[in-house]
Image (cartoon, rainbow, N blue to C red; front, top):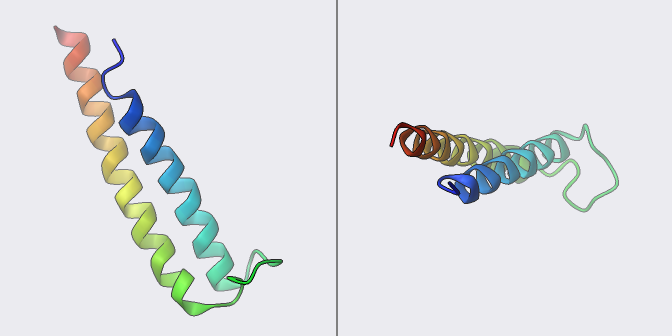
Length: 68
């Protein structure tokens, strides 16, 4: 029953964090040391992509668990 929930949660968290880091790196979100720093505009999309991959794995695990 709980198959995939951890992966879904971690994936969604990584997506949100990655998007925030991207926006901060691009200077869209201000008020942080990371704002306007180009490295976060690079790290953010990478974290977002990893989060999407983890989310897909979690969704597949839930789908497989429901079939059983």
